[in-house]
Length: 335
Image (cartoon, rainbow, N blue to C red; front, side):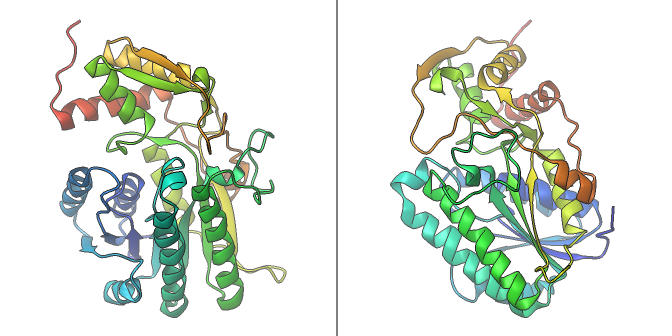
């Protein structure tokens, strides 16, 4: 893998779940990391602050609180950081939330991304890596999802903003020769996870003796990928910017996932064993904007940077449960 030692990397969304772990991976690679985040209250800000507190203990890390949807803020931060690379992970997440609050996605996923591209245009970056999503595949039925699939029919507004981000990045890469790579993240789990995602929601409910909701009657399949595997993959990609070849822009798109679809019921079964408690399962119909299965083809990413996730679901969930008990002060069940 190409080296990132000495690189000066600005990570947006550094207080987020993936952002924290990517910052750690970059620090492990001996890069200098500046994190930025606005601590949006979409979920528990205390958790975001705790992530940043953990990062501040690392040499080579600095942090700025700022809102990149405000014009000029990111350009100034890039200048102060003297950044050579950017990992853009800041965004308004959530497929279901986008149905009720589309205005947040316009501001945080479209306006902010436009400011990012303009800032990168003038910064002379070695590489911009930005977060896209498996949601761009919509209701596509050909599994595993391939980067060659058509993504012009998103089924949620969140997905539509990510499709737009890919098009925006390609145009800037073409016009201004900015090396840029979009990563279509699949379902990521692990310690320090988001409270609105299944591992946290299910763990909290199971320990409290409350029901968990399984949509599509539990017949959902997800490409669960452990967060440390993801963070390593992002670092590998950042160290290898795409080249302009045969008249094409220096822009690439990759899936980043686990290449194995896991039934949601299997996920819950594993979580039950680790928690020592049975879940109360409440079966529900499919929700608007959701899809029954996600499953990544990662052949292209493996060929590019030898990405190969290796953490088994049981091992990854065990680490998540250990972190959850420690962070929230919950003792393990006897026996």
